[in-house]
Image (tube, rainbow, N blue to C red):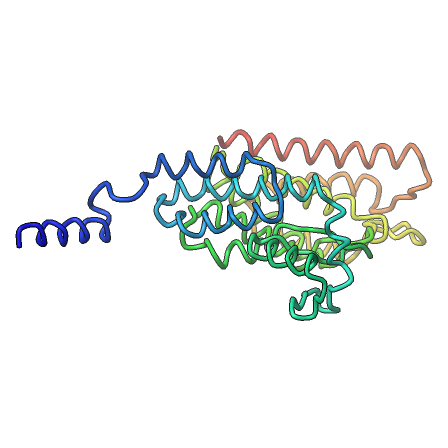
Length: 299
């Protein structure tokens, strides 16, 4: 009877987490560090994802955040080192961007697809070629409730870019208003979580990327019309409205400085004028770098 009672007590402690049953957070982190340090292969990605699925809930938000950032870096390493793997699955990408695993008849290709999908790596068509991407909507679906707020907000921004990239083939896929929205969301992450090393670098990069596009446009969606040489009326209206609605934003300061420059050239620019173009691009670079400095001062 006594032995039975002890057994039941130990079992209860293990199930409720009040004893040392099961690995500690330190042990989980140590094992996970070894997993993401190993060679990244599709099979190993699936194994690492399974470990993450099983253990992330035990790590607390800070520990979970560190684990997921390490996992993201691990996936990016695999993608960077194995770009040709996307070609295997490219023929199976549907018009809506999805892949139906049931239609993959080749065993090797099917295994590749299932391993990558389990690990939140997607294959899609971008700029007319198959590419692999970290599937941020999948990461959020699986792990959102375990993440610190700063990382959740960053991954939501990454998920939006995954679903609708800002540009493709040097042409904008989204409106000026949407780019403003994404840039401001990146700024707010930096303002609300100053010095947060989990998000600082990527949020700064996203802010700079979106701001640079707002200032310069893209090759096929320029801010100055190639024929009339006049600044985009849609961009001007969107930027003016944003400044009015968000007067304290660093992004608004940048756009206000930008408008000062635009007024000096009467909102007209001939890209073929080498001198004017150099001044334009130099001004945009300066505005962008000064904005990053302002955000870094918040640390």
